[in-house]
Image (tube, rainbow, N blue to C red; front, side, top):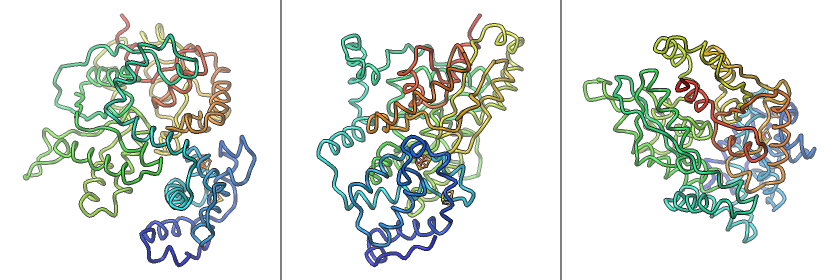
Length: 426
Ligand code: SF4
Ligand code: SF4
């Protein structure tokens, strides 16, 4: 699709973004195949709430048409699930185009005051040191909260012990911003399973939020600052010494939240124009793995280290229904690994035959900013998962897990928690 950049985008602070967007737009042939797998197009049936329509809106802005509040709303309604990227036969880099489009539109269209307050509170609050104490207070008062507020405050978890055995193989884990307070067992379970497979988990306390929340709420500079801070925090753990010796360095930076993983894998792209950080960011991204990418190794090591494991899991583990997060299957293009390897370990894990590719509606802060669409997608997803009649639902991203749990009494867990439980079942 040819795009003639308006003069204001040719020599301004937005020139780089505009050229990047123009290159992405060039690949789009406007065929509309992407609409077929877009959740918001499925729900709303409006061309402008599908990827092709949003791409067209961004093209219009770049060509000098002033964006309006309506343009902003159609871009806001996008979940950034990137299902459209998986479907697109022309390889259109929709996610990056949307980031640019939202930035350009927000620089020209003001938001209502209440919306500004909510968005500011989310972007500053979720990665604030005050989030932990606020969550603890919320958990204490949880029985007195309204049902809607209870959805945002999961019950307090006891994460169990952190393994202390040293191993020659080491990886870094990212605690993240809200996961330590909302679902701490996920990272503790990760460390215990890795320990059972002979891998030591390190945590760098000065690493924090991956930067996704701020970046996707259009505070791109704030998000980039968090990314640079993480790179600085991890750098001593990933460097080789002057002789090129890698001993002591971690072999990977492992993400057990696919939403953080997709972002850290993008550090290299996001910071590519930053001369001080471009190379480091690329190295960090190249070392980053979703936890499921370790599964081939884990399956072999666990079977070798724990005789009779598969038989024990077959006899004692609950039946599972799996929801693959969009950040895993579309953002990172990792498909089938969790199901395949958990089956090899003896789990009965099922995936819906209908709409397994569709978003559950969680999508970072989307469930707060667009609750009606978000809940409609959640209920649709739970309907499909419910047909599998499993005892436990599993996923690979804390946001999806908490969002799905708010709509069902069936337990929803991270798959690593279920594996951890199976290892420690007598
Ligand atoms: S993004 Fe891809 S699938 Fe969608 S209209 Fe453009 S070329 Fe077609
Ligand atoms: S990212 Fe998801 S919601 Fe947004 S246009 Fe693409 S498929 Fe639709």
